[in-house]
Image (cartoon, rainbow, N blue to C red):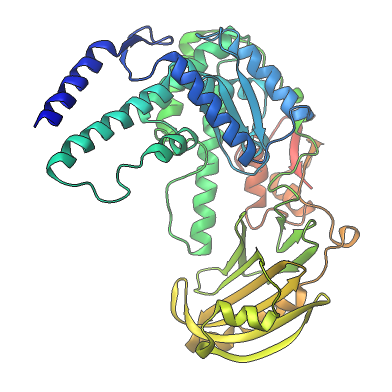
Length: 484
């Protein structure tokens, strides 16, 4: 009982001493972190993220450009005394996030979809808004309050193992986004900061419209593949519904009645030549092919397959059918044969027709496995393992056992297409290229010229890349982005 009374007294004491003036809203906030602690936490997290994230070098031209625009916006923000640091994450993710104290990250995937310097200022202004409004501190306070609540409850009901470990939740929340009210407040702050820095306020509206189009085409691709439709989970994952944010931003932009810099061409020139999707270290999907220059391999899928590349594995499936593919690799700790590794991955009693051979000149093993697999409880799995030094590569393809004969030709075609990467023959990974819109141009035509480099929805994705939909056409002579 003494422990409970002491805890309650501590909570009351903290409540009396934890009100602070918010630098952005000028209102009073209940927070449990001082500015000194905020800055220390941000610095600690930034050191960790800078080691773990694939960042462009600070001297990279795109990184220099982002920092220049960010510093311009930060100079007119509510906490100009902070040192703001802007970094570019070199991956395809449509996201940007801010750590406490002014450490701001924007992913190349989002940068690729910006169509003016004003839109870049809007994104960075939004993230600066999270810093100036101390949203990270508010999130920390919420988690601390939850911990205190859990501690009080645990006096009467013991906490289950793992439930009190919320430290990682705090760090992850900065990347995934803040609450609805905080996101809307950051939108409003972006609409204040960007014009003060000299940029057109309507860029926020254009940016949000692009995000809405990306959300829609992602859903179309998943529906086309036969996947379950989930809410958009890239940039602004926990943000308010995009349409609602667009409407609110339009109203605030109208009230601003300011015009400013747009700098469409400068933004596009800054993106020219950068990868559209994954970096060379992650490989890339090009139409129906997968190219991986660093791993020195490539393979091709029949037209009915939908391909998805991720850092953990390359996956694919036949549209609307329960037929799947996965390519992954792992580092080995000791030498073993490919057949022994395959037997270590799958229970020996389930393996049929195990044979040894070679793939691209490397020792390999192949087998048919009768077992359960993701999405298919009774499956036949076609498995191939090959060894390259201390690295093992594993391809698995599977389908329902009763239907396996229908897909054996596809499995053989994919495996037969596997060969060493040849840049002269296959080209490089998809990159942003600039094009001057001329008479007779159309989004479907540009998609056809690229040989549908982005898959079935290439035309729509190139239009979205330029802040438009398929019904909109740029003016003659306008510089646009395409993918080659």
